[in-house]
Length: 83
Figure (cartoon, rainbow, N blue to C red):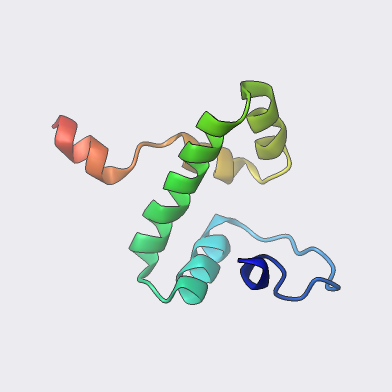
């Protein structure tokens, strides 16, 4: 997993939006963008469950606001199941 997280450890941090994030997840995982979107949303949901509310808010406060909205949205499968 280290190679996924440290693609170029010496490179400066980049700022980019949600769509670029999804594109990069899709490219690295070799999956369609919708699958990358659902997977990323699942990771945010697990992270939210794994850490305290304050810690999660701290992480999210460091990302653009569109990530907070993305993380709060329900995955499409759950919405469809609820009808």
